[in-house]
Image (cartoon, rainbow over all chains, first blue to last red; front, side, top):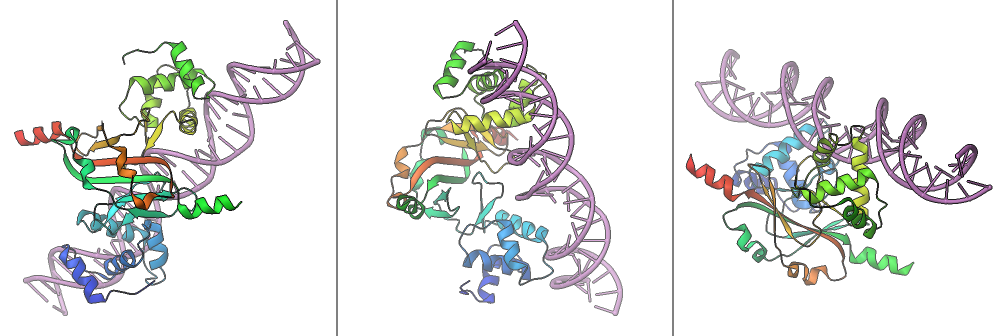
Length: 144
Length: 144
DNA sequence: TTTAATTTTGTATTAATTTCAATTTTATTA
DNA sequence: TAATAAAATTGAAATTAATACAAAATTAAA
């Protein structure tokens, strides 16, 4: 994991989002910022248990719940059992490769929600999820 | 429930999708065609248990799984515990009202997947999910 | 320091989905 | 038609992500 944020930076990030910084919150934030792989709660837990041996899974869930309320992360519902979490809250789409399981980002124009049928609807969140086979896995298949 | 399909029509629908028609499959299909509310497996089960008293939930899951394989339904992953199922497999988006819980359809241009970043990716499915407050619930709130 | 508020933990619970062997139904063949 | 094979259905048990919640630990305030 590339370490690109100081503790002060992480604390400020939380404070700016109206979150009191605690060790767990700082570590979860650090993980999310440095591992932009749309991790599950368990991914986060499995990594952080190495850093905080007393960590409980409930704390990870609590932290992610708080982060969602404060707009720090979005949850991704990708037809999997587990939710994934995305620290990138800018408008964008997700590509899930059904072979390797990786989730990639791709740009989407906000124009798509400019349709008559959405007038009068207060939009809080938009998810654009594409399922298929990524370039890498597709090329591997051709070799066989 | 409006009854708009004959058993023969339902059987043909299944056969055209390479599915052997059985009583359960016909009833599940009928329910999906006549109740375009993006029901959950339990919604379907709760209704059909009144028609088929011996019905098991596993059969509903089995049937929906088969329908998905054969392209009869799509599963909707809307950050709820349960999956929902949609008999409308044409390209469109979904609006989930977080107040009343209803899920509405809205049109989306297929242009949104025409981006450079998706070239080389074999697309099998696209989900566009919008979360917020629907017109009806929004107007109710204003009254208060 | 004492008290209050907040955060974290750990266990138990919930509930949707899956697994799978047994049963039932349907189709095939002798 | 009866016997056999194949397919569909059932029901109980297992799985597991997420939640609830009370107790413990930590931090902040008085």
